[in-house]
Image (cartoon, rainbow, N blue to C red; front, top):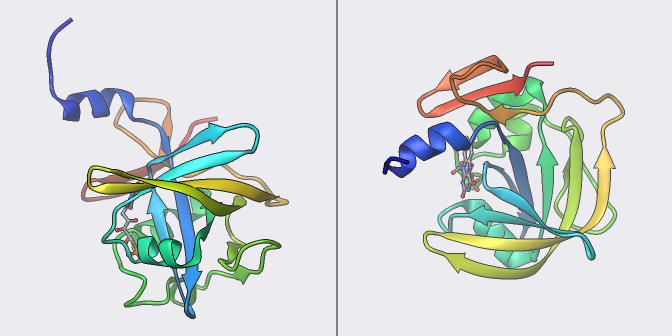
Length: 178
Ligand SMILES: Cc1cc2nc3c(=O)[nH]c(=O)nc-3n(C[C@H](O)[C@H](O)[C@H](O)COP(=O)(O)O)c2cc1C
């Protein structure tokens, strides 16, 4: 063992990291917030947790509505993920700007994203402050899968095993090599 820092640990352990989009809507506004920080937390009832910084517009929308959709982009949405992950949704309608198709789900007001490979309708069942982020625990009320599955978009490192898609600043996207 040798002592090191968190940056080296993350380079070693954090990849691949599947990207999910938190989609939320309230008072006629909506946004898409790409997330690397998400996890399954319960089988019954089915639950997932997401970690969202309070300064995100999506944070405000989730607190107001008590709901969100967790949408899972495929390899064709790397550039869209970069766009959504570097702009605030109160300044731009990300659906309109990217030509994404909002679809009404069955349980929550936030839209599903037709172009994503999977969509989960979630209702907030609890929240917890974790340092500079808020963990929202979402009970999964419904599950939607695309008819035409592709590979899921990931944040990747520089090691072998990925097909590289796009890199900008600290963000590097790819998919797991088949
Ligand atoms: C690959 C990637 C992963 C991200 N992961 C997170 C995350 O886990 N939590 C978070 O709060 N922000 C995360 N972000 C940043 C938000 O997506 C970004 O601030 C976004 O513009 C917020 O949009 P909004 O202000 O409309 O909600 C990530 C961005 C990218 C590109």
